Image 1 (cartoon, one colour):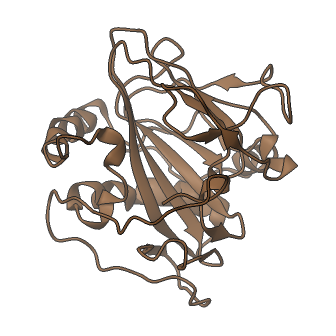
Image 2 (tube, rainbow, N blue to C red):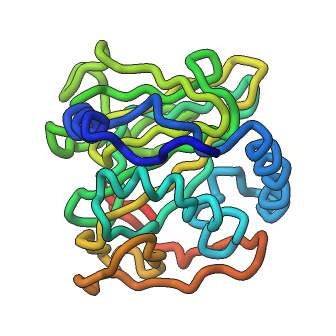
Length: 270
């Protein structure tokens, strides 16, 4: 592709002030996305009978299929425009809403869930399908990252994909929320403190996206809470030494399992 995958100074300022970026150059062509989507079933067959697609978390550590995506230079160029020259990738997860899915993602801040400090993480959301309001695309509240972390509460919604979330009208308002619209192969970027969420997908179209988490090398994981935490250095050098690194995977499709530990009901999850 001939697109330039570097942020302009104006785009960087928008991200810093609003907490997100849209209208970025496509990462993948339609033909490339067709190939990527054609391989996705090879991951899905690795799920156990009692698991859903939400369990495909951090499988880029064990699958070259996903590792190639999270380490795509087109994406890394854009992330470098926010995090600077030294950063690593540690997280990835699929958020797939099949047609007529009632699943929702409550309003939340990513950083509230993670055993990481300080807050210096960029989430890249890659659209595997065309995404809009009709099929449950994400919404975000501009500038909400500037207010710090807000206490999350237990959600009673049976269709919510997160156990904790924020309640509109208490500590924030949703009337300024921006609806994301992406074509397959495009991405959005958002700050780890930005308040965002999404509604159900009552349409006849699938809404699939892959989230990727990139952090500056100054970000320290709490290995007591997440003993399985590992990362891959994307660019630059790590002069802090906070983070354990894993070798690149060698298997095309492989699952990653976790040593499950109890997590606080109002804090970090794996």
